[in-house]
Image (cartoon, rainbow, N blue to C red; front, top):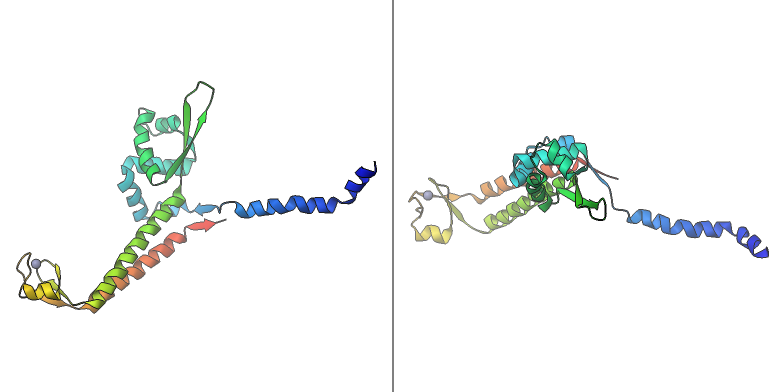
Length: 214
Ligand SMILES: [Zn+2]
């Protein structure tokens, strides 16, 4: 009996001990990303990305999973009028390659086949588009550095570009079409690239407006 009273006497300590790990776990929980899918799917680039990757059918599958939520593979195939699950898998795998969809598999009984449940990851599309823009920005920056550091000539006919050495070698003629070469104003190229960069940065900004983290 005295032991019981002792334990009861220290409830506060016990509570504190219990709470601490829970609080830590909460911090470790992955950040939830919420995407405005309606606006995302209105973006031309978003549609183009998914279509280039998986075709019109793939886009249909992706959109369907976004709006309907996770779905079992055979049911999904049926809903989208594929004659069999095998036919839809081709598209699912293409999307899966870029993690635009993911799956869990479940076994119903001990002898049963695995059943696949697929879901769409629209937040991944935002990430992929952002990466595309960032890659192009990096390229443009490289090109700016190159143009700032050298003299360039452009064919008046076919727009090919040549460095000074090449231009001299060919008597300021184009080695492709024999057109005449003009000196290319580096500032023009740089200006063009710079405006492209700010255009892309705005695109990234707009893209990230579609994302909320929780
Ligand atoms: Zn030319």
